[in-house]
Amino acid sequence: MQPSEANYRLPLIMVSELSRLELAVTHLLYRPAKRRSVAMVLGPEELPAGEWFAGREVAWRMGAVGFPSEQGHRAWIAGAVTAARTFNDISSSRRLILQVLPYTSELDAAVAAPNLPLRMGSNGTAGEWKIDVPENPGLVGALACERVIDGTGGLKKQKVIVGSVGPIAFVTASFQADDPNWDEVTDVAALQSKKIRSCLESEVPGGQD
Image (cartoon, rainbow, N blue to C red; front, top):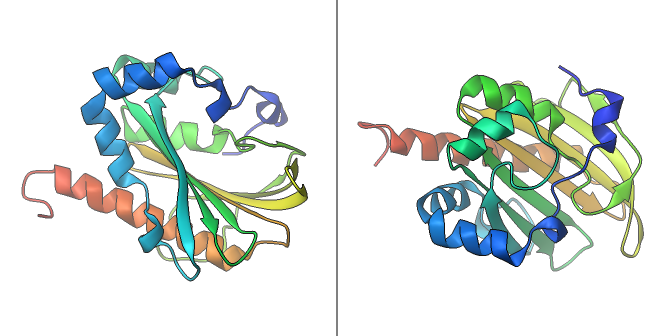
């Protein structure tokens, strides 16, 4: 399934849209859901080659900001919380943004994933979806997109992979002045997918310890 061209122009989930009140409400009233989502996002020590350090980490209620959708509304009613974490590479211009988004069903996550916001804080031109994500055994049914964005410090290349594992959708976005390496982006996405799967299995009685 490909997103329509109009989806690139929809309002985007951006940290700047999050009010202090929303962040406080999420932290105080939705603590278990927040802890669950934050635990699913990769940490800097889990990323492949590079000297990564974590930047800002935020979590907010699904459906609280961004464009509305039936899937997001159901997640909001269920009290689900999305979490995002940024990373920077000390030795280069590379930057990563990882986000996990819990939905109420596998179908909702699969339907929502292709329409997840892609610009994540920067203006850019719509990219082309690549149905054939570079081969990686850890990624099943994922979609990839590449874009050129006009951000702080000039033009940067962005490669994005979206997908879902069970009821959890995820976004892996790589930013770099030079063209990011697809293999690295898919490796990170595969690791993110694996961690989500491991977390879900640990929640099932008789799953991982």
